[in-house]
View 1 (tube, rainbow, N blue to C red):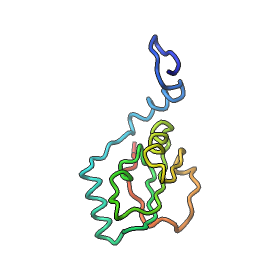
View 2 (view 1 turned 180 degrees about the vertical axis):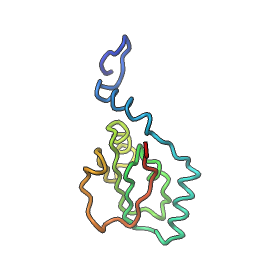
View 3 (view 1 turned 60 degrees about the horizontal axis):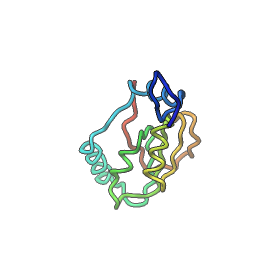
Length: 122
């Protein structure tokens, strides 16, 4: 267990706790129905197997998790929050996941076929 805070034990360090607390105004959940519709739309636009996919604010990776198997290719995700990035890395070990701000992430130019996700606008 982590450090004791206000008389209770927590699995988070003080820095992780503050990060989680600060992220709650901008944390979003996108419904699986919406995500599936987006993937269907991308398929209709010609995105298919082998596509280079980027999720620039992936959270724990719902867009990658609901990506149809017949559309999978190289997947890259970016997530600022360390806790959600670590969860995403465990859920999608076959994907490249950066735990940092999108603006600080070294991504190649003209590499990705599609960018998908639900970035926070908070």
